Length: 112
Image (cartoon, one colour):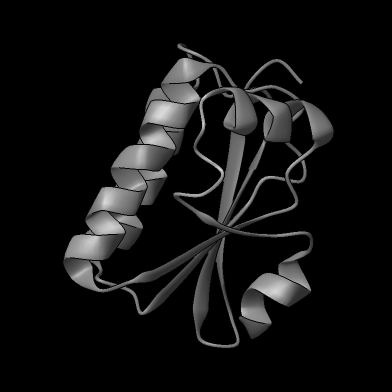
């Protein structure tokens, strides 16, 4: 995957944002823009499905932290799901796994 593709859909009343591809310095602005749309809409629940993200660098992490801060301000429930082993290890190294609610699957995220 050369370019990050981001889909947004409403599932069971939750906004689900699903990026596909690497989230790095060049791709994170695209991802940030989609997350801001959800933030501006002040959605109740936001699920970010990372199951199709094989790699994420610090700019991707910063984008997610920014999304979490917006979610808290807007009282939006934000849940991450489907982290690949490589992305999960980046969260662990950055000590961010406790900052986010993380589930294994989209179904679990929608039910949480």
